[in-house]
Length: 209
Image 1 (cartoon, rainbow, N blue to C red):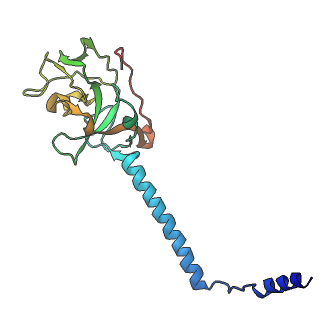
Image 2 (cartoon, rainbow, N blue to C red):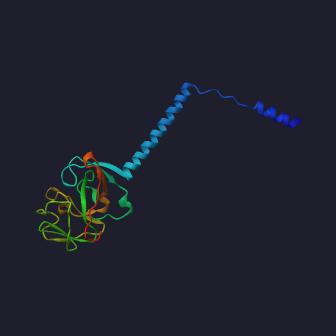
């Protein structure tokens, strides 16, 4: 009985008392929590922006009428790390002449395919593409990479890209094929202006994608 009483007394003797936190201590703790949340949010934003989805602004009319000058879009940067690039997808790519400048173009021919422009039409593997997203012919340029009626084969790991505004676009007709490592991502969504906001749907061709 005495041993039990002794332990009870010992526990009572060891009871600690704490002082309530001062306003300064509470402010420091609160500030630390806020800074921690801001740091975590900033880290998440950087990872999201660099590796998953980033905003872009369309500059110029090379993709008209599909995209207009000064429209805002979202670029998906992760899909092409998980799968192949498909014909018809609109992509963001590094300029062949300046890696600090990005272009927006449409993928027309894939690695290993034969591409030709003749009489204003685009042919892939001897089949004319049905490009319902454009309303103009596709010319070739003097001294350009792609000449009228000349067939070229897209090398492995490269793509043939065109702007939808064919008379007013600098693309593979001028600077040649685009290496895959120059492709930044695919255009996923247009978010401004609100009147044209929505997902970007890829066209379907009779050719195998």
